[in-house]
Amino acid sequence: MPEQPKKKPTLLLMFDLNWSVHDAPHPFTGPSTPQDWAFIDPREYLDWHLEMGNNAIFLQAYTYGGYAFYPTRLGPVPPGPGRELLPRLYELAQEAGLPFWSYFCVGADVAMSAYRHDWVIPESRRNWWHGFLAPESPWADLFCARVEEFLEQFPVDWILFDWFCYGDLDSGFHMQPAWFVKQPFREIIGREMPEDSSQITPEESLTYKREVLARFFARIRKTVKETSPATRIAFNPPYWKPADPLWVNHPMVNESDGLLAEYSKPETLQWLESVRRPEQQIIATPINVEGVVEEEVMLEWAEKGYVLNGYIWGTPPRLQPHPSLQPKGEAIRRAFHRIALQYS
Image (cartoon, rainbow, N blue to C red; front, side):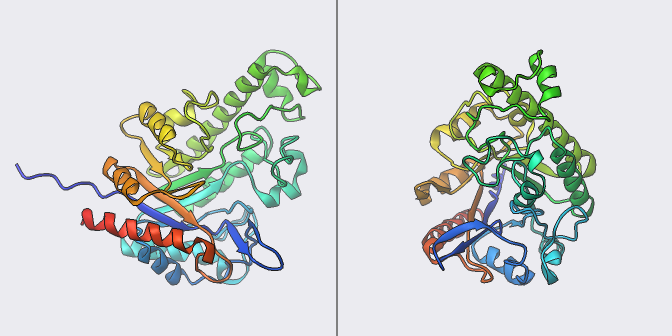
């Protein structure tokens, strides 16, 4: 019986338009503004990704900054051709037979945090100036409406839902009293919401956050599956440590199509391996806080069938990695081309 060919792993180093890197008047990396990447040529964007060794294409539907790369009716868009970047790129990817991945940031939207301060979780601006939007607030309605609007037009293969968290990327954030907390607190905890967070125990805070995030996950998943049943979903909390009490046996972990480990530490990947269902895809990131993982590690991940999903930043309007990041990009490019040869 002939040997079955090995399944090609998905290789995706994305030029991340969420961010812009600046050297003057002082070094600064922050959320991109609508005009920063508005004039990218879709063909150039596609060609850059193919040159890097990608076999899938990625572009944000909505950026973390709060604007969209398609003609949305539910938020800001870039000037000029920027609003057509995703439609044109989606068309080019289909012509090339390439899977299309897109993106929404669940926990943060720089624009909406400025426009709707009353939707922001109290104390969440302490570590992040924009704060984090509350899933109990009207933000959840707007967010799901955006996802539905997008998928009606572009039934993409995957959506990465980033920063799926409550109040901070650190899962230890202690919940705070707020107008939007009163009713769900009563439903989940079984008593009236106190006026001071010190009167909420750590156990109550954890129970509350788990349930609120479970409800939001269920809404997002239902929206996706009813609008575009074939679209697969993955969420990035991120996982700072394995078996975090916030996520153990959580619906997001149990029912997502992909388990994304942005900081792909061995212990985190081992935990995800131990809890994943057979049909769930592990998504590993070939960068970490120390730089790029070794090429041999990427080869091992590919052998295990992981998706390799990295990202790199640049200075607008040029579609080039920032000079400080170019060695990392080149290392991943070499590894991706080597992996592709093994599966050709």
